[in-house]
Image (tube, rainbow, N blue to C red; front, side, top):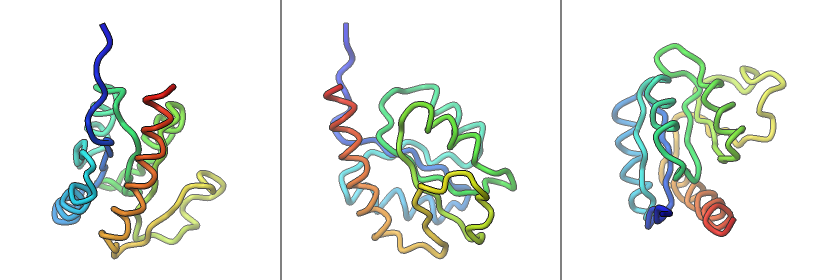
Length: 131
């Protein structure tokens, strides 16, 4: 028996700043997206990823409680799930990794990010649901 996909595209949010995570959740909801999380730790992010095949894209804060989010990004990449980074760090933190991934600098324009993510999520959802 196949499970029906979620009605709205699902966006994983990995963010440890509570107020920013809340603002992102509201802005994403305004774009008719379902928020998975927000995950305030790397372990919680991995748990959410393992629990579903319904993720259409993700927003990843580069530093979560002092840990780099890159292992989460690698898992998403292997699953073919698009994502973006948010960070207050300089882009040199990425080195040669993830050079093709969009980076949003903090402080964030939450509404702009939500609109951009909406497009990314809908594009991936069409590919995922019709695959």
